[in-house]
Amino acid sequence: MALQAFPDLWRDTELPMATACREAVGDGHRTLLYSTAPPITAHQAALRVAREVPGLPWVAEYRDPWIEPGTQRLRWSGTIMAPASHLLIRRLVRRPDLHVGVSDGITGWLQRRGAAEVVTALNGIPDRLLRSARKPVEPGVIRYLGEFYLGRDPEPLFATLGRLRAAGELPEGWRLELIGNVESALGTATGELLVRNGLADWTTLSDRIPHDLAVARTASAGLLVLLAQRQPDQIPNKVFEYLGSRRPILAVVDQGGETHRLLASLGVDEFVLTERSTDAEWDRVVAAAVGRSFDPAPWGADPAGLDGLATSRQLGLVEQRCRGLLER
Image 1: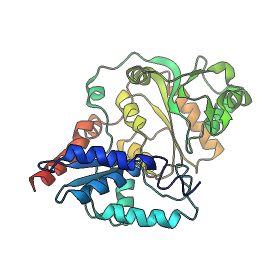
Image 2: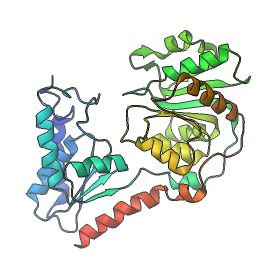
Image 3: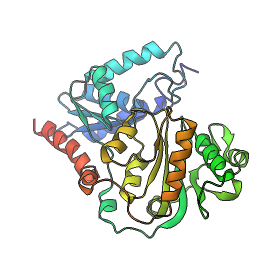
Image 4: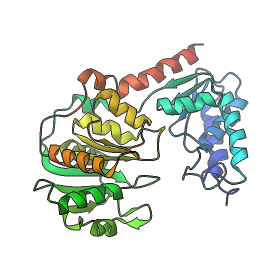
């Protein structure tokens, strides 16, 4: 199994991708090759093309770190293939003219592995969200959008809400909405977890919805739930849409991780919980966050801080470097 999944489950696409890319590149005149991972196979295909076309500038983007200890993405992690993965990443980071990391944590990961030229460009807040008018708020509605995967565990939140509800420490009228691939959480049916914690009558589960509708639901929520555990170097893309909504965020993140640092830098870490939080801290923070869900007033960082996170500004950093490579 480890051998079949190396370097990832997209391994059979390497040659077709490289062939299609090679045809598109032609003689390489005024052309730039840009590959993004995961899957790491995309970089493998790009390496093939870069070797065949002398002088072709290559930019390699990493949206997640690779071969990190404990990752659940790769079936061969910790197997006999692990040494091969380290050799592969060293080969991949030597050739590109520029690397792009979508967080400071990923940029650091690249630099520690020998990448010479690296630029950090966050996913950023879509410009249209920063310009859009505020949506009417649904008081008391607590929303989670996405799915429960990797280490994103909702049960500590369910347990806290159930405990506070049983003790009568939550205001009347709140409700929890889970939207997306939320039928199960880390191998357990979500409905079972809700029943176990006395939340079944207070929670609705909805299937995936179109992105524009998801953005609207984000903007109208009384409180947004963010689960980003066991991802210290990544910032989930929904964080930026959450920030653009100007609604309060109840975030469960890694202590000192990239998401934690981003929220703290913007001054919106009032409702943050980490693996170091005690039961008493969970009770206090969750109760305060639920109470804030009834307040329709905008909540968020200084506008200048949010403007600096605009997608156009973040991707502008990459565009500028790519133009420089083409001109050179």
